[in-house]
Length: 499
Image (cartoon, rainbow, N blue to C red; front, side):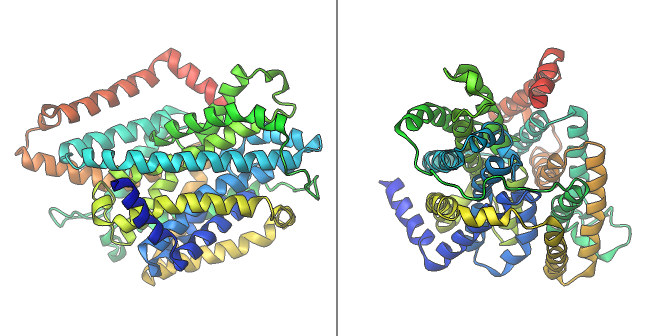
């Protein structure tokens, strides 16, 4: 009965006119930035963080969540129509979705993506509602040692699941941890890495750093390799699936939902990893695998279900443990901190309207997205014809205004510009920026729990292995690291990311 009463509380929050409006705005923006190649949910949420300062916490987080899972829907539109994924998790959708469009079945491909995403999103929302409270109850028993070990495991897992070189991913984690130490030490009051700059005494501004690395830096990369977009399908018809289509997509959608729900919870996992893994599974076990790459409807159904399920279950560790599993969740943690909410297991008990309102809003948001994606497909097709050189000046201007408005400080604009240069240089050297942001967010929490644990034990480091739970988490972290460093696993990992 507690679950139903909590869902009722969530419904009363999510269906408030203001929250419905901001949920709709988030879904609409998410779809739009998913449709427009060159923007993604990470960059968009980073740019919109300043706007959330003046909103109630429930409205702000419902809107940001809508942007995240809305982008998973919108990304499939460009993948199908112009073979250019609007979102990284839609890369594999383009393989068969575009071939279906060339074969005159663009409507069926888009309908499959929307319906598969809606089903997966609904299942993932139910999993979130059922699994999050008991997980948070367990986390309430965590002490500083257990939290430190959990964060170490999260950072190790994010390195293991990051694409590219393990050494580079590890370097990004360390760089992020160092950036997190900038400012005045809470325990001793000693300034660290401030270089006599008064604005740095409170630390680097999270919004300015994330807007630079993920917002403007993304624009520079897109300008460097801007592609001419030509929409081959001007009018999409045939949005109704046939009985044969339904028979072929049921099993892939179920498998994609299950795989995406599991991978979304893992640190470093989420929507992109889920969609790639789901496509690889279907390509191996589908009875119609000969059609893959030529317009197999299973090649659209499975990854689209997986990426939406992965996007929504990635909220589980963020809401219950305060541990972000990917850059978007790191930004969500930042948004909660900005709103004065401490991420972690106490959110359910301290902010029940926020927690359950977000869960219910995910289901209503998925319903909105089906309505936005199918009937308004003509609008999204027209949006694809907007030249990128007309969009980017407005986006850069918006970023500068947002960075300045946080503290009414020009220094934050310079911080954003500086990290734009840093992010662009890192991308040129093939460093993935996502681990940097995770290290930056988790660094202060990692240090705080380390120092608390050492104070409790009076400087005895054995506190981290005396607790069975802390010891288990550390052993698991070491095992994960040893596994990915093993030569055979390392080669297979590189092959998997290359594929």
